[in-house]
Length: 184
Image (cartoon, rainbow, N blue to C red; front, side, top):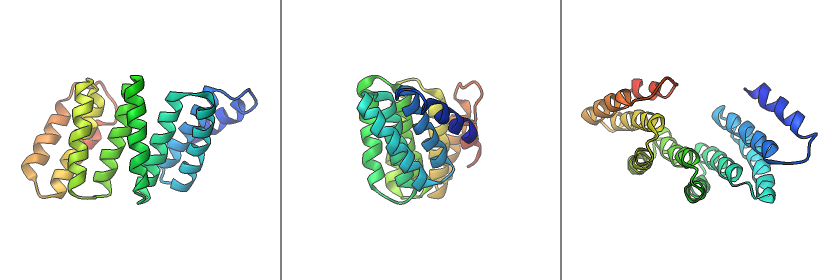
């Protein structure tokens, strides 16, 4: 994926700047964030964000802000929360449900992953309410798995089992998100 993203950027940088290049920068930032190269993720996402703002490309703005916020939170920088909240609000306003789910989902799951305590439970509940209200089953399964692990981390064995089973019962065709429900 990293090689494909780099090739796409190399090709697109030879063309007039547009949505595709901005999204390619943001996709590379997402891969860096997922690979925990957090400094590089923020740098590349900032590049995507600058281009997207010049183009008034709301989709890429939302995507890049989600990458920036996620990388910052993973690095222990609370400013990431503001970027994720902004990405979520922009995506909701534009009717981009999957981008909104990714922003609010990352806010919740990163809080649970870095084990920030009780606020993670509230964030998971908030994200889960959003994805359920928009019938995003894959995201619901993902969040239920994280909420199950969060419950387990806090000694709530019954809640962990309930959420893990609910995650496994989500009507999702394939995908890796089932793993989150299997982990607890």
